Image 1 (spheres, each protein chain N blue to C red):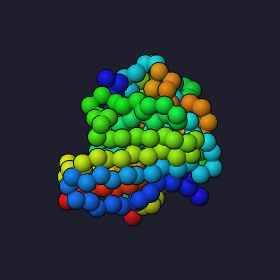
Image 2 (image 1 turned 45 degrees about the vertical axis):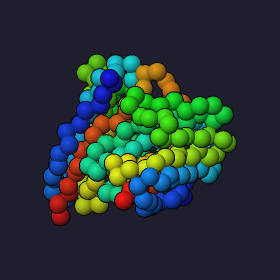
Image 3 (image 1 turned 90 degrees about the vertical axis):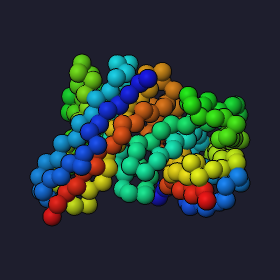
Image 4 (image 1 turned 180 degrees about the vertical axis):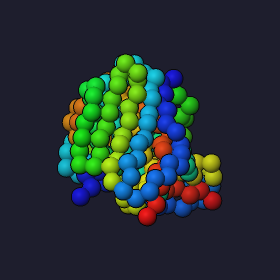
Length: 112
Length: 116
């Protein structure tokens, strides 16, 4: 069973701080990785995707991928209360069917 | 705006009845759509992959006779929960890729099913 693991949290950070969200995956053949944000009662929305080892930055968000360690992370700089949500990490299936395997999500709380 | 639309967003039904949920891709043709189920405080669990013009591929443990999937066109997939029971109450979400297996995956707004 291919798995994606996340700490469910909650992760609590003060406003303006850096929030660091982590994820590990078991399918070594996965090539694509995604971070989704989900507000309570809503569908997930894509924050970032990353395919290559290293860092990828988009505004306040930085995704980091280390395929050797099978580790993906998301950094949120200058965290805002509106960033409070559940963040889902997903890995593309190595069978290249387009399926995503989701982690259980990490709940982030940004306190004013 | 939303590129994948789901309907209805909320549905309440009696135990034993069937409920149909529609998923439409608005701006693109989707040969493949995915149906997920999410229970409270849990992650998305893939139920099945819906393939246009052919049978859906179900994940292990998902009853294909209970969760009927039809993908009759490149823009529409439907999920029918047959003979629904209270344990089927959940948040059902569809998704579709904009192109091939590397295109961005868009999610519908989700459909919250409550079975009384």
